[in-house]
Image (tube, rainbow, N blue to C red; front, side):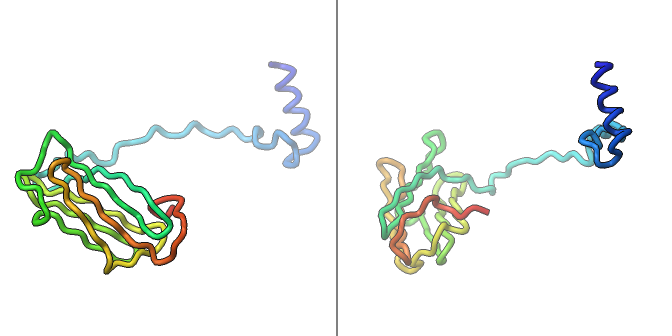
Length: 149
């Protein structure tokens, strides 16, 4: 260790700020310990929507979304009347209002643009699944459902 320390010292003495070991020349104080600025209890209220679980697949001209419900908290009335789908050319919101709590899936900033007025969906109450079909504006392969930020 002593020979290493002297090699650093010798290099610093000979080359100054152009030394390979220049970063070792200054002694920096240890960083301060992080301090807790604020602590708050966050409670999830009954009005907070649950996020639907989903999967997706594609062809060159379509994207299909499959939303699934959690078996542990099924809605009371699961059907076409309780599901709504809203879309713009880059966003899709799927909402389910039946049951004890609202559920939704918000997909913001899709990988490419879709034709918003052609969005179609089916509700399968037997399997607790919502299938949503999105038409792509340009037929091409998407490498991800959402754009990277």
